[in-house]
Image (cartoon, rainbow, N blue to C red; front, side, top):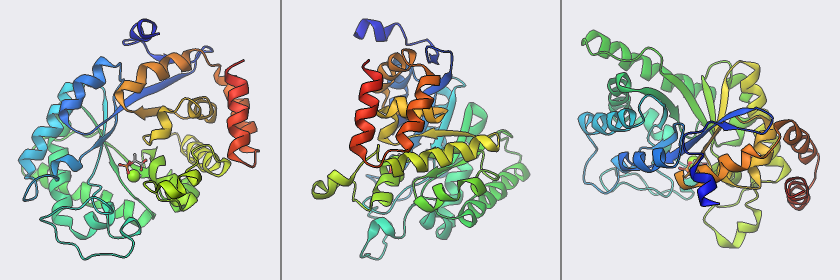
Length: 323
Ligand code: PEP
Ligand code: MG
């Protein structure tokens, strides 16, 4: 099997009836680029930038950040790289950023909420990203977007920093796509409106499932409710994909679900364009997709959307994919 997968390293990701998708990697530092390429990644679908901010005593400088983003963009040799802006807060604390304690940190002041208030931190990151953008194919996405106003504000700050750099004579790319993570149910429900303004969606199922099922993703006691194949989750995913396609945009997924063997047939059938996963899952996923018919998976997904429990969905997928 390993030998079979290895042959797929430089191959595109295509179903047996000719449907192309992108299989890309989740990375956490520039050091992960090598592993992504060795495992056949067609790009980076999620570069978590928190590492820049963690394990140190002060905020990372613009220059520090620029060097890391440049390293990833150059390392990926023109392949698309989706960088997520700072997703701190919740469980991730920074010693040098004193934030008041909260009753419910996962429902609190974090990610884009923090960045839109601490615009000094956010602007520095955006400037570093803009400067690095000339070194590859950069896309930027904002985490934890709950409202269109948040996206508009974030985009405004991005455009202001682009203008500032222009005035300083610093070159930046004019083709940076701006997207959002869909990981809060309100955003999935309103995807048709978001799709008119964003360039792409990336569904963050780790949080989307947690917030939809109201089940802490780290809590063993309620892990039985953490159900990626629950028809409610599949319907949200479908809404997001359909909304993006209607506006000529694309949808990726960067939560764990994107690399899950039971989910992949369903996601292929729902029309997901980009699957972002840990590098070591890519070749296995490419092999699986090459054996599936996208047409048949469309039917499978349509059936799954009509099921009422997660058990029924799992049974459906197993009977379709092992036959
Ligand atoms: C997600 O929520 O699915 C996601 C990819 O982001 P993180 O796991 O970093 O919260
Ligand atoms: Mg998340």
